[in-house]
Image (cartoon, rainbow, N blue to C red; front, side, top):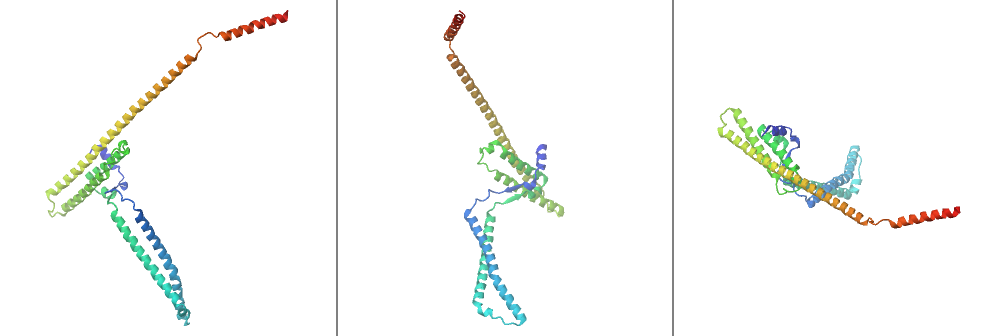
Length: 291
């Protein structure tokens, strides 16, 4: 990787990097509705348990105080049916709440299992420098592809960039684990490190570099296509402007021809005669007045 790419890679903010194995699971309205109902049952059961338990607590406190004061309490026997009913209602409401909590927990576990696996930036940031730099370049290259005009216009909707970047991220984590194991074996000094271990790591790094280079080639192709699209648009815009100017010019010429056709080509005899007549009569009338 050249120097510019290395500089770009070191500027990557790993806290913003999260790779997902696949697209998020589709929305399930029925499941979301069931979860909302269960949460409502939990809240109602809590409220119901509290409301039904208050009279029981009050009765228990009364009995305790009466026993302490050596006073006979008769209302327990008089209202035993009501108290037993309250006790049953409290127990039933509590059990319903527990069942609802269990159902919410089970549903949440199912939803979590359907979530795609993730690789966080912290995991990638802990990788050895050589593969971390490659991972940085891969992430930034994917962003370059997504920012291109060709990608935004949907020319590559069938290309799965998520799968490509997930594959590279998985290889980086595997290479990191291998590197750590090699380092630990080397530090143990018991001869556990074999020559082929280093070769495996080097080969793993080479495969990651090949994958990243393939991404760079794809980004270069997409960038070139975007430039060609921009150039084609510029030519089309120029042609449209030329056609518009030609249309405007033709309109002006047509207007000029129409104006020329409407312009009189004979002398203005009518106006001249009228002026001469008025002038002659004015002179005659003035002479007549003077005579």
